[in-house]
Image (cartoon, each protein chain N blue to C red):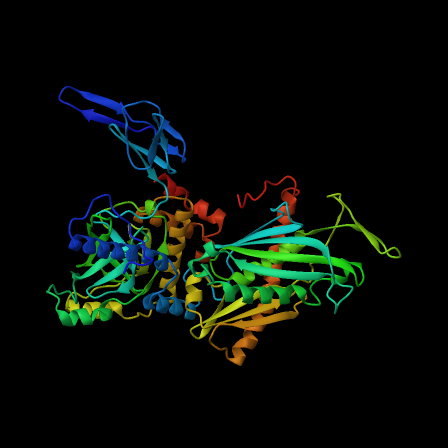
Length: 288
Length: 329
């Protein structure tokens, strides 16, 4: 596929054709022209540029890099992540987000019961009542330390997740979109974490008249989810896994297309993961 | 105080002792963070996920939409290892099991002088799952080996007298080696499916026996072989108790919530050959009777599916045509 950009200048417009999107394997030669800067995923041997990972060649002016198809999650500031608490420390939690290192979530970066206030020694002793080991949370990357460790925060709409299930896909399939919290019209919520973890739950309606303190308590308790909603949740989960099997980008539109296709073909939720069914229903999503 | 601990030194030099100490404590913290990642990868489940899962099982709609008694689709490929007499690989969703069978001439068991001998060994590859690293898989390996041994060595499973060469002196020793390459839950059933298909795939070279001279000659011709009759080899169905109900063919998340496990091996005739109970919890006797009845029905289904997969594979081409170890196009 060739991509071209139209540059509109004062005089007229110039079409610049960029190299076709190229997938390379480790050890494959990218170019033997000189004058290119080598970026991530490449190495130079005797003046020739080779790829060191399997991925897509990206070129920005003179900088050539290879973006790997499957790799550990690399965080950026502002990413939404869905992670699991692995340790409770003195004033912070350690969170696993499928990256090279675990992240830290400081106590000061958590808003307790919707109230922003300075945490005191009592709060430090009560940390387990907020997040325990193995809990799943949604958070946003606040900053990246020098050594690459991510610092998360869970203010506003982020926090502990319940009444749903987790599915893990390769992190490169999750596109960076404006809104990672999506509510499907048929009563299922998804949180698409940039790190590849996706949380699927039933839709929780917030009552605006109650205070945030009670909201969190209500949201946390186990809800009685009817079997029809469970069937929809498992269908969404299987659609996401079918998209991952076929290496298609996962975002609300592609999930919706796959879901509709599976309903149209009257495939039972549990049968979606058979290879033939999975590739059939993801056809339309592939074209998006 | 740094005895035996590794420190990664940067190229810079330190001027004061405080600099050294602060660097060492930073490094310790950094190594701890990196070490943590290995433990992090062990499968864990939160209370919220557990409650959702158990709620799903009670409503007969599991996390992936299956009913309590539904099996996941599986794929089988046989004849993939050319150094063995028989081999097979089974892919049950994420669970990946490889079986290799070697037949060697050897001594019989003194209690059964005119029967062949079967040796089973199951090993969970340390890379299959974070729990299997080091000696983590030891007790699981032992339990799996025991169950498969009981399934295969059962009197009704295989006709071992056909493996006798010279009664009391020389018999065929069949070595069944099972390797779990990836664990996605339900290892027992995947291994029993793979073992049965590998046994069906096994070629035993023809032997010319001279009874009076007590001599035998094993044929060198690769096309000159006999097959084992695996008609009555049982297939196991594993039930895991989660909450108050039980499910069949559990995934990794479900196995994290289980309290007890019951493996029932049934053969094609519907006879129960082996029952193995695992896990710390217990079963109600009425539930056990129900499970055994379900096992008899589900195993017939599994055997039928396995046989159709194998005949489909046979129809696609002979062993020599297929590419080695290229799995599941």
